[in-house]
Amino acid sequence: MAKCFSATIWLLVCVVPCVFGWGFGPSKLYSCPSTAKVCSMKEVTLESPEAIEQARFQDIHDPLFIDSGRIPNFSAELLKKLPTISDLTLGELSIAKLYVRANFRQLSAVNNEIAELLLDDSSDATFSMRILQLSHNKLTALPSLDRFVELRTLELDHNLLTTLDMAAFAKLAKLGELSLAHNRLLTVTSLSSVPVRLDHLKRLSFAGNQLVILDVRTWEMESLAELNVSRNSLNRFEGNLAQFQSLTKLELAGNRLYCDWFVVEPLLVNPPHTLSVDADKPDRCEAEKLMRQKDLCCNPVSNEGFGLLDVFDVKWDQLRRLTEQIAMLNASIASGSASVKPQLEQQHLALSTRLDAFVRKQEGQSEELQSLEKRVNQQKDDLSELETGLFEKVNELRADLNSKWNGTDETPLDGKSSYTSSVSTNWTLVAAQHENTLTSLRERLETTTKQFNVYTTKSYEQRASLKAQLERIDGLERKFERSLEQCWELQKRMDKVGPTIEKVYGFLNELRERSTEDI
Ligand SMILES: *[C@@H]1O[C@H](CO)[C@@H](O)[C@H](O)[C@H]1NC(C)=O
Ligand SMILES: *[C@@H]1O[C@H](CO)[C@@H](O)[C@H](O)[C@H]1NC(C)=O
Ligand SMILES: *[C@@H]1O[C@H](CO)[C@@H](O)[C@H](O)[C@H]1NC(C)=O
Ligand SMILES: *[C@@H]1O[C@H](CO)[C@@H](O)[C@H](O)[C@H]1NC(C)=O
Ligand SMILES: *[C@@H]1O[C@H](CO)[C@@H](O)[C@H](O)[C@H]1NC(C)=O
Image 1 (cartoon, rainbow, N blue to C red):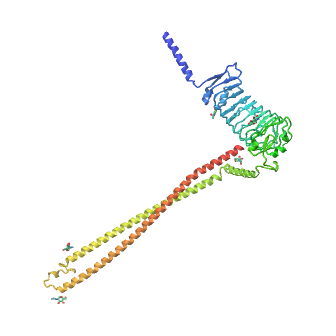
Image 2 (image 1 turned 60 degrees about the horizontal axis):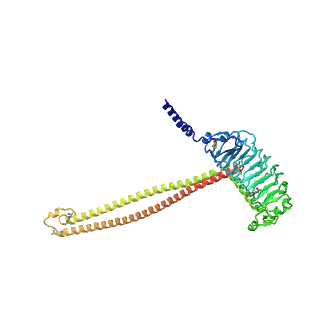
Image 3 (image 1 turned 90 degrees about the vertical axis):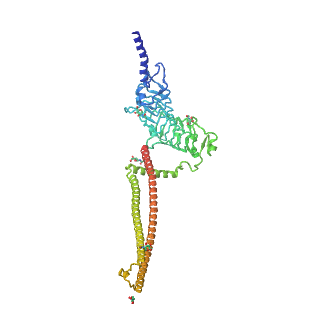
C-alpha cells in the first residue's frame, strides 16, 4: 500500500510538470508586483499569433513598460489581454506593426521598425491619446489623425516621411508640440484656402529634412515659441516669420537662405530682444562659398530680389509637362490598358506571324530540296542504266563481230551454206563476197563508233547538268541555313522583348498605383 502510494507521488512529481510544463511550454505568465508604481516587464517575446494567444498576463496595471523582448506584430489580439492599460511604453521590441487603441492616453514606441499603424476602428469614438511618441521608426505615411482630438505631443522624428500636408493636423486643436525632424521631407504643403490653425502649438520642428521652401502664409500659430527648421536646404520662406508673435527661439542654421531674404524678413530686420536666433558653424560660410549675415550664412545668388526670382524657373514647365505625361499614361492604363495592351499584343502577334511565316517557308524549301534531290537521284539512276545498256550493246557488237570473223572460214555471211559444199569453188566470187562482207562490217563498225560517241557526249552533258543541279542544291542549302539563322535571331529578339514588355507593364502599374496613392 505504502509502496503504491509513493509510486503515485513519484508519478505526480514527474508527470504534472511534464504535462503542464512542456505541453504548454510556450505559454508564459507575465505579471508585475501590484505594489510597483510602474508595471515593468522584461523579455516579452511573442513572435506568432499562437504565442500571443497562449500568453497570460496577471496583475498588469498602468503605466505599463515592456522593456525588452520581441513582438513584431503588436496586434489588437495582444491588447485584448491588456484591457485596462492606457499608458503604454514599449522599448526596443522590433515592432513592425502597431495597433493603437482608442482609450490610450500615452503611447511610446521609440526605436522600433514600425511601418504601419493600425487605428482602432471598432467605433467612431475619438481617441484619448495625449502623447504619441514614435520617433526612430519606419513610417512612410501617416494614418488619418482626425480622431486624435486630445493630442498634445506628437513626435515622429527619424522616420521616412517624404511629404506632409499641414491639413493632417487640422483637427488637433490642443497640439502643443509637433516634431518631424530628420525625416526625408521634400515638401510641406499648406492649402491656401484652409488656414492651418494650431492655437496651442508651442514647439514645431522640421529640422534635418530636405525642404527648399516653406510656405507659412496660412499658418495661424499664435503660441508658437520655438521653430526649428535647421539643416534643410531652405532658400526662403513664403510669407513672413514676424506673424509668429510669441516666437522666442528660431533655428535656421544649415540652410541656404538668400541674403536678400534676410534683408526683407521683418523679424530679422527688427528682431525683438526676446528672440534668439541660432548660428552657423564659424567656418561654414567660407567652406560653402556663402556670405555672412550676422551669425548665419546666406546665399548671395539672387541679386535681383528673391521675391522675383524663381529658382525652379524653367523646371516648372518641365514639371508640368511631366505631370501631364504621367496623367496621360495613367489615363491610358486606367481605361483598362485599352490602348497600350492591344498595341503590345498587336506587336507580339505581328512578330509571331512573321516567325510562323519563316517556319512555313523553311518547310516549303526543305520539301523543294527533297523533291530536287529525288529528281537528281532518278537522273543518276537513268544515266547509269544508260551506261550499262551502252556497254552491253558494245559488248554484243564485239561478240557478234568476233563470231563473224571466226565464221568466215566455214560460213558465208549471206548464209548460202551450199557454197561450202560445192567442190568447184569460184574463188573470185568468194573473194568478192568477202570484200562485200568486210565493207558492210566496216560500215556497221563505223555506225557503232558514231553511236558510241553520241552516247559519250550525251553522258558528259548529263554529268554537267548533274553538277549544276548539285550546285543549286548547295545554294539552296546555304539559303536555308541563313533563314534558319534569321529565324533564331528573331526568336532571340522575341525572348528579349518579352521581359521588356513585362517591365513596361510593371512600370506603368507602379506609376498608376503611385498616382492613385498620391491622391
Ligand atoms: C498580426 O496579427 C493579426 C492578429 O493576430 C493578424 O491578423 C495579422 O495577420 C498579423 N500580421 C502579421 C504581419 O503577422
Ligand atoms: C533643432 O534641430 C537640430 C537638428 O536636429 C538639433 O540639433 C537642435 O538641438 C534642435 N533645437 C532644439 C531647440 O531642439
Ligand atoms: C489615375 O487614374 C485613376 C483611375 O482612373 C484616377 O482616379 C486618378 O485621378 C488618376 N491620377 C492622375 C494623377 O491622373
Ligand atoms: C573465234 O576464234 C577465236 C580463235 O580461234 C576464239 O578464241 C573465239 O572464241 C572464237 N569466237 C567465237 C564467237 O566462236
Ligand atoms: C566465176 O564467177 C565469175 C563471176 O560470177 C565468172 O565471171 C567466172 O567465169 C567464174 N569462173 C568459173 C571457173 O566458173
